[in-house]
Structure formats: C-alpha cells, structure tokens
Amino acid sequence: MKVAFQGEIGAFSEEAAGRLYPDCRVVPVPAMEDVFQAVEARTVVRGIIPIENSLFGSVHINYDLLRTHQVRIAGEVKLRIRHFLMAKPGVRLEGIQRVLSHPQALGQCQTFLREKLSWSEVVPTYDTAGAAKLIAAEAGFTSAAIGPARAAKEYGLEILATDLQSHTLNYTRFLALAPRDAVRPAPTKNPLKTSVVFALKKSIPGALFKSLAVFFLREIDLYKVESRPLIGRPGDYLFYLDVAGDSAAPLLQRALEHLDELTTDLRILGSYPHGETWDGDQKNLS
Image: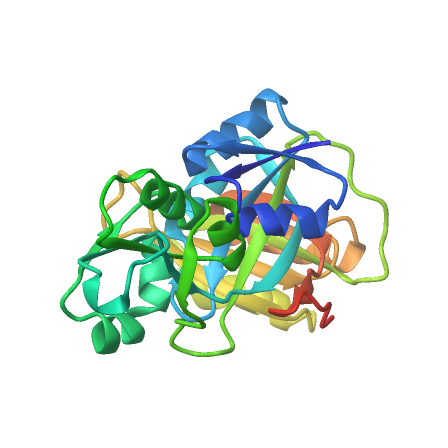
C-alpha cells in the first residue's frame, strides 16, 4: 500500500502514515499539492496531510486544497509533537547562526528560539526532516535544524536540546486522503465524523447562524468550524465544519439537505472514524 506525504524520510507526516497504515510503503513528495495530485492520479492509495496543530493553529493551505481537489477524507490520527534541536557532531549551542525548519515547527518553538537562540537567523524550509537533511549536507558547522528525533538519527546529526515546543501538550492532527470514488473503509469501533465545506447564500439573512442551527435542531455535535476567504469574492468566506455522525445516516442526511437550502457549493469532504491519539512515547492514548 503506497501512501504519499509531503517532506522527507523522518518527518512527522511519515510517522502519521505509519500509525494509520502500519504496513504501508511511504512515498515522500516535495509539496502539499503533490500529495493531493498523487491521490487523484491513483499513483498512491492514500495521502497524509497535517490539518491543524494545537499550538500554531490550522494548516490553511490544506483546507484550500481539500476544496479544489477530487479527494475525500478517509481517516485521521493525532500525534504528540516533540521538537528537537539538531546539528552536526561538534556544533555547540552558542555557535549556531542559523536555525532551519518548517514554518509550523518554528511557530511551535518560538519561545525557545526567542529565549535560547535570539542571535540566530530563523530560516523557514519545506519540511522538518528536510531541514535536517539540508544541515547534514552543508559544508559549514554553524547551522541547526528543528525536527523529530528520528530525523537526527536518519541524517547523522546530534541532538543539542529536547522538547523545544512552547507547551508540552503539542498535538498535530493529520488526515488521510483517498480518491473521491474510493470504497469506504470498513466499520471500526470508533464513531464516525463528517467534514463538509460550503459558502453562504447572501440572500438569506442570518445565513451563518441558520447553517449551524440545522445541526443544533437535530442535536448533532459540531466539533470544529473553520473559515477561509473565498477566492474571487472578496469579503465572502468558505466554512469548513466537522460534525458528529455518518453522512449516510438518515438524521445527518436530513441536516445536510437542510444546510443545502441555505448555502452554495456544499460539498461533503468525507465521513471517517475519530482518530486515535499517540503520545511522545508512541503510546496509544485513545
């Protein structure tokens, strides 16, 4: 089973792929959109993307790509994210002039960077493990990377500092993507949730309130509401919802039919099991 993820071997997304699909063959790709394209083209069976972090918020590009690509959400997993400072053997903290990592990781570690490496240049890169790979290939000894411990092992780096994240309870939620018409996964012990995206009809006063009320009136839980600007329509927004239940269940079907009357461009992104949570010691907390 081939599973695509953005980044290099050793990245957190690779770990997420292994948690969801333990026997998979991972396929690293350069950009987030490449994951979506690989799933659409069926060169892989699944794709793994990060969607939100408990410290640094949503990965907005992936919300936008969910709407513009013909994929559906087939699963999720939550990983506890621990960041490590790594460099070539012999490098010391006081000698570090540049720190490389993915912007999300840099944001999650901003307190450490401000207090312990305030003199260093912070350089955003395409991936945490990719930052480690770049450091390992450099000729100099004045750069460091922030990323997972396994990336240090993968690229022969030494860990100089541990647990750089600004809060110990740092979790990232990853989604598994499948082709739009893929067979739905077999039932699991975990209850299902459904993700949808829509725009509001301008002609309906209080449309946002009414769109959320279709779930409240049927006592259906809302887990998350995310808004994104609607490209080409300044001042208008797309809304992403995660709600309890299976889109094929009669109660949620009626709610979505009601929602369709109030909105435009309504799209069901997928119904999938609640994801398991893994802590830093790789223990399943679910």
